[in-house]
Image (cartoon, rainbow, N blue to C red; front, top):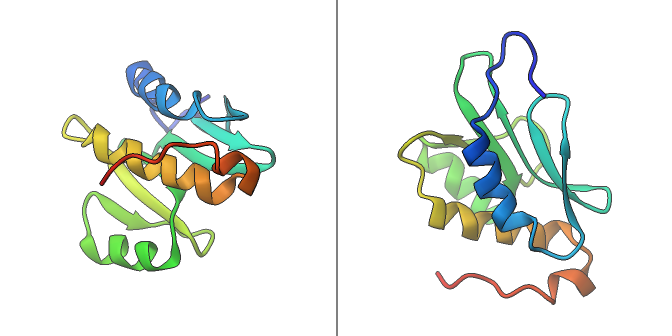
Length: 125
């Protein structure tokens, strides 16, 4: 889903994200107010969308110390304006998909109930 002034996320990117999150226990893809999100139960794990500035972003959850670290790293990372543990990342042709896989898996483990998170093999790194 996209709003008139926001671009649709390339389908290839949505499929790549879904290949990571869709394999995790009870993690489901669904349309968001703009773009696509993945949730486990009622908790959002990740949200990918096009911005009014025509750039693509993904938001996900991180540990509090990671949020501060990513915020200070700068581009392509940013601190999301909502939630104390939300991290954002700009997506483009240079995105490190291996790193994003690790970050998304960590986000799932933060958001999922413990009995589901314990079933997940975490990426090395």
